[in-house]
Amino acid sequence: MELKILVMAIYTLVIVVVGIAGLRKVKSFADFFLAGRNVGPWLTAFTYGATYFSAVLFIGFAGKIGWGFGYSGLWIALGNSFVGTLLVWWLLGSKIRHASLHYQVATMPEFFEKRYGSRFLKLLSSLAIFIFFVPYSAAVFIGLAYLFKANFGLEFWHALVFMGLFTAFYIVLGGYKSMAMIDSIFGMIMTVGCLVLLAFLAAKGGGLSGLTAGLNQVDPKLTAVVGPPGLWPLFCLVFLTSVAPFAMPQLIQKFYAIRDDRSIRLGMIASTVFAVLVTGTAYFNGAVTRLFVSPTANPGAFADGKPVFDALVPELVARVVPGSLSIIILLLILSASMSTLAALVLLSSSSVAKDLYGGFINPKATDFKLTMLMRVLNAVFVFLSVILAYFRPATIVSILAISWGAIGSVFLGPFVWGVISKRMTKAGAIASAVLGLGTCVGLSLSGFSAPEAGTIGMLVSLAVNPLVSLLIRPAAAQ
Image (cartoon, rainbow, N blue to C red):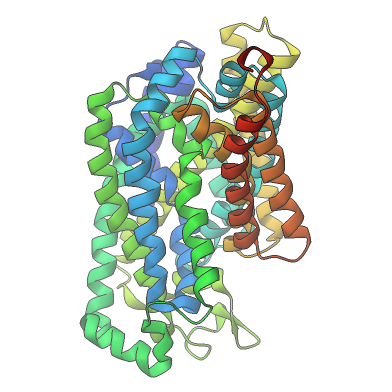
């Protein structure tokens, strides 16, 4: 325990020092939000991956998907790596960067206003970011709280308060530049942590063959190409988590801030390799939880004999990795989560400060005022997320699916088509955002699972923009 506390103290100190260093480099809103558009490939690759993957992946998804789907959950890892990472960088990276420079925009709502001439779409997208990023951040906080509870014996709400204060402190200081600098450290920690976890899982389970044989004894379907829940639920999870990154604001921001096209080419390779390692480790880890976690040995991970999915992986780590090395896994998940939280907080505060306040309430607000307002809103957003996390409204997977599904349904159609084609119109963009979100929310209220509702909403958003743009052309184009 003393070693864990010491390492955590050093870890905290490093982040504080980097945050203060970032504070000294912030001279304007562009510095705070985009690091002056001068971030190199390695920092961008690490910050993209560390933002994409967090405690939501390692604890929530790995626990629930691994327990239910077994090895077939690795399809999600492949989708996240080669669709949500490689294809996003390859197909859109350079286009996003050039579009942001052409329209002189710093946020996605600003892009919608400039690209489509629609203040309504700017307002809708700004509100969607703030509303749906709160539960997403809450899901990350829930995962971290379970992790600290398993490793340090802290009360759930004590861990929430600690992580909330820590996150608010370092992101309020230096903004995106300090976040990118810290993410490079986080990325190295995540890489080492993944390798350590894989090594101990293999050693404890008798290698891949031993782990596979064990899962076959539990249920042969757990090692099948498609796990027990079936093809449609698996497809929805792959699509939701792999296609949404094409328009997730916290990931798209990375391309606004990257230095040049050469950095995009290098970052694409680095981020893909990183994604394969991180997602492969997480879903493999989740798939074998049944072999190491049981109601008898781990009563804290079960309630009335049924698994508490968000508690499975913390219990697995505690059983598989020796106490002296478990701090590495703690830092792995903590590092991934801190980066995601920082990105969500930064984007949510910008949607209110830059897009709502600066765009609608006080268009003449000074650069200094917008930067200070963002710092205040960072703290407010963290506070709201921690409060929601305290009540634990659903499993981490459900909370994330609702958030990603809603954001993807609003943003995918207008953003992806808006970047790659000049033929998309204002009517098409608004229709795709409204109908996509309406479909997602409507299906959720009708009893569809969150991944199903999100997937269908995203498909509607992607289909509607080109269809309406083709049918309803501006008067000058007819």
